[in-house]
Image 1 (cartoon, rainbow, N blue to C red):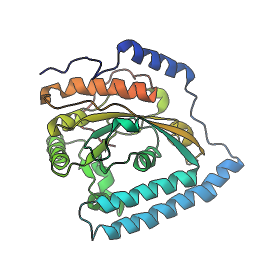
Image 2: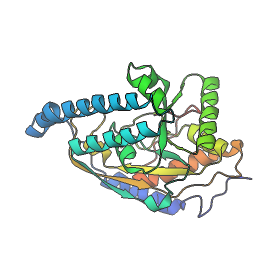
Image 3: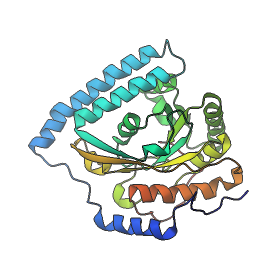
Length: 288
């Protein structure tokens, strides 16, 4: 079965191009850190409260891991932590497209990634049990790495193709067996918003086809105005989380995952109103 371009699976090229053209005109430049009362308040008040919340909620989650091996309780604690961070930062999120997913469904979510605040927005506003597929380096950080392991998140080695495929196969088995969801940033890390949506690595599509679950494109807007890359100033503001329609993978072969990757990138670009960056070579894995 070949991956077909259809209304069910793919937006029309004209519609996508229109959105991307509009994005290049209307998107504001990320704000720069300037010495001001708002900057001082963010550094002196918001940043310490965010650190305190992370330490307290991380400790609670760690303790819960001794009693709940599934990671479900840790996920609920993480959702509470995410809501705290958004409240501390003064971030209000408008969610669009919740009707596209079922609370008890199993999905692979793929999202653009421009800010460290992306993770709290996703954690607080996607109402399903999910785990992150993340680069292995995060699991080597003291305390954080141990917490990620015990919460059920899955490490991906970025420089070991064989290890990467093994990890993706393991993740697919977990999705099938436990019927949970995974969230993946297929660009491989944060990207400056002005550079456009980067090439997607193939891991998300490979995993979705391998597990046979639908893959859901997600677009985050406004995050570069709240916490741009390289900034320590968490700004109050509004963000938008757009959840697209699930793309079925049942019946697809692993040979078709590259075509699926391209389709998902176009959908995420349209949802996030980002232009597509120029093509570049990318590895087959994906990590946050």
